[in-house]
Image (cartoon, rainbow, N blue to C red; front, side, top):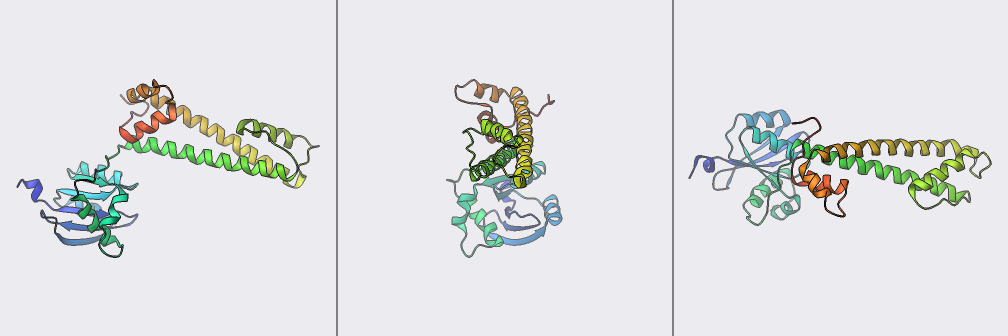
Length: 245
């Protein structure tokens, strides 16, 4: 048995402020449990020899995995969907930490690759765009609904529809009551501001794609566009940020 194999294995149930640890020996038998604050958690790993850490692949897990890798600790991230089956009793933080150790022993569960900072940042850009697109759509739908209530039919298509609504609101003779006209105008302005922000974000994605050989290759495939290419790269491998060598 090598030295690393003899080191303890730790199952970590992550949280925002309190972390639950289940520490097992080289035979995967739980010998200790700890409940630590964030500061205690960092100090515990910085001052303890650990062979392997097992965590659920949640949002903050990739940050902690990178941090632990920096300490020379091997980290295994497991898909969240597979962990629940290994909880033996009622679901608690302690039970979840022990379940991670049980799941890690299953050879059929493929671990999740630890994401780089650049990958997570790129995924954050995609999520931000989706949020803005969703907000834009909800505002357009609200405006369409208001117009229908006053007997005004708006053309299909988001861009054409917003332009038509803008003209309706600018016409003092339209059927839109004065009482709501100002509020609807603010909604139109909000939509246009979102469109500016979305366009800027897409320019940033385009700049990133130009610096990524993987994105360039993907974009050469018929039917694969900017969003698909950058999303695939974010999920699979790192992408160099602007200005990097």
